[in-house]
Image (tube, rainbow, N blue to C red; front, side):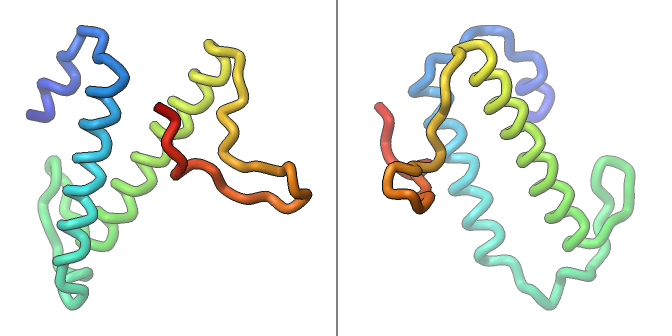
Length: 102
């Protein structure tokens, strides 16, 4: 599965891409929600490196965040738009990123 992600070359339609992302985040939420916190310091071999569960969780979170920032930057540059993550119209910032923009 992982290699298929790197090999993908087709342009994925927006709705399909958003659906894939939402499903991935929902899967992650389920896994983390059911993870036993007493196992955070258990060690696992991941891609040839032994790490604790906590280190793996932090690494994946940071990695996902980095790619999210890349997507945001490229979108803003290529589309020349403000993605409006916050509404400042009232003088107090309020987040808008959960609002549907279909």
